[in-house]
Length: 197
Image (cartoon, rainbow, N blue to C red):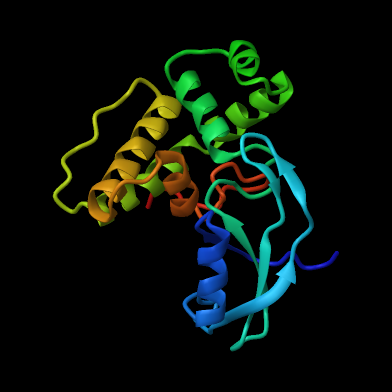
């Protein structure tokens, strides 16, 4: 089986990404080498985003190639992070997958898959975003329980996104979540986040 190229989360502005590649501002997550232009990944349609052809980059240090995934997306998902995030927020408030699917115009099986995967990893996701929230705002107080593992994880995601915005300036919340999760919020296989110590 061929090795999958690692993903680097980047801003959604193509001109900014190109400038970063040409100017040497983007770094390899493995060796910190400079990333340079290396073609494009295949084009795909992402619901809520549109047509997307992610940039590829090659590390000048280790020689590995990387896909530069815009912060509007998650790894291996056909829907934008804002669409998926809206579904998670409604579920945390008590909504079911069928009404969510109808509201978003997404197949119900797709929504059910998102919700099951998030529920499966809710504790690890909560721990991951708790670490981010406290790293971004060391004076942050305790985060109140929201009523179950799923809702608690969604609440902590909101706290971490808010801490990011307060520290770095105005941004949409769900693209921040995509960046803080490295695109792996709804991983297909095992959860990419370390569990509770």
